[in-house]
Length: 105
Length: 154
Image 1 (tube, chains in turn yellow, blue):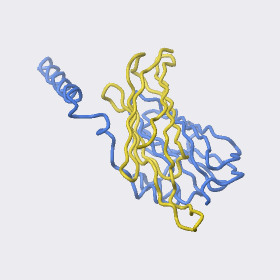
Image 2 (tube, rainbow over the protein chains, first blue to last red; image 1 turned 30 degrees about the horizontal axis):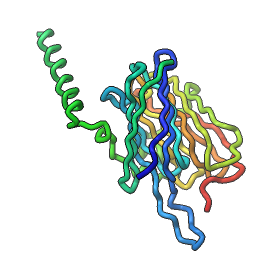
Image 3 (cartoon, helix red, strand yellow; image 1 turned 120 degrees about the vertical axis):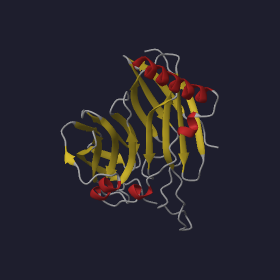
Image 4 (cartoon, rainbow over the protein chains, first blue to last red; image 1 turned 90 degrees about the vertical axis):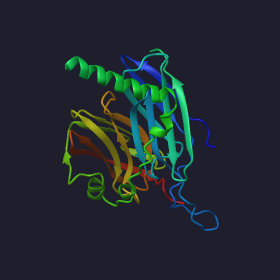
């Protein structure tokens, strides 16, 4: 099981500013280990962010997103106290969902 | 007639909300398990645009890429893209000289700013493209990022 995401959601004016740090190795499948064997690819492919049952961002990623991915975006329609839910799924079928409460601006 | 239509719409929304509340539709399930394998295997900007459903893209001054001119560490290159194009639906980040061109694709629903910021790996100095789909049309901006130490090697 992957480590929890670190999520910061706060109001900036009338928008919710979301910053996420995920814990994932994002292995490309192109690197070799000390024995010269290819290290298999292991990376997040899908990310989805919801607020109040509505998707506010969805993403598809390849292997070239950096290890321990960072994501920053903004959406309208949220208020302090609301929850923002973030989910990812990787190429091995592992998943993780975490949520954060929107802080006041 | 109109009032009735409104009533139906309201009820329809209520059913969805109920389904969500009852846990029938879990937020995690909304996660599009769809992954555009073909797009992530493309080896050039033109191929990526095609794999994402476009026939070509137009250079646009309304797309801004914020990224360093020189990245000392190719493993972690911060890239932010902001689009000022009306009806921006999607933003993709492409690294021309990476083994696979497409790095990330973000879908921007109405209500979400046409802006994303993330970090990508770059194997070597390359042009980085921000591809934006706005009102069904394809646009791009490009910025060269010099890489001192590549981020994809062994």
